[in-house]
Image (cartoon, rainbow, N blue to C red):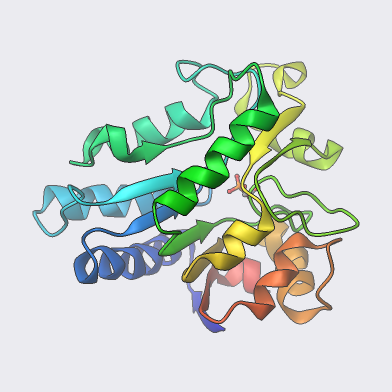
Length: 239
Ligand code: PGA
């Protein structure tokens, strides 16, 4: 595991953008596993700046997102498809047909999960998977559980996740209670994993995930077993 401890959120974002830009420059046809939430917003901003400066080309890049709320259409400003379009895709020259997010409006979540697994397999797997970490140690929406789920699946969100995400919704009762997420198996099969953590409220999760036992009660802890893991965090998260 490589660890970078950066001064603050802006420096963390610049470092992460450097690592992702290197991936794209070295492998312009990369499959990127992408994440939403407040943590990667600065990284996406840096990538957009580098694209606008003519330093990056997304035309060959493909993307698969980690997760999506069940029941939210792409046009809903809280959906993760909307987030990706607004924070990254619409500002760079990625082919929208090559960007993938689970379908939150599916009538058949199980079939959608099978489709998503198959899609990732057909794309040849993920070259670089970007992750944030939940304060309960979740990655994607893989919540603390008794075992590590392998493939994409539908989850009931933990109360702590619903509370944490309520800040994005006008009313807390509007946070969906279910989501579709990539499984831990898919994340672990990514060739490289880049995980970011920012802020004091992530300090305990970081400590438990990377300096504690590997356990499904802290889903991110399994990343200790990943052969190519980079953790970039700010001082507040490092503690
Ligand atoms: P955050 O979420 O980036 O909004 O803190 C991270 C996560 O829950 O995975």
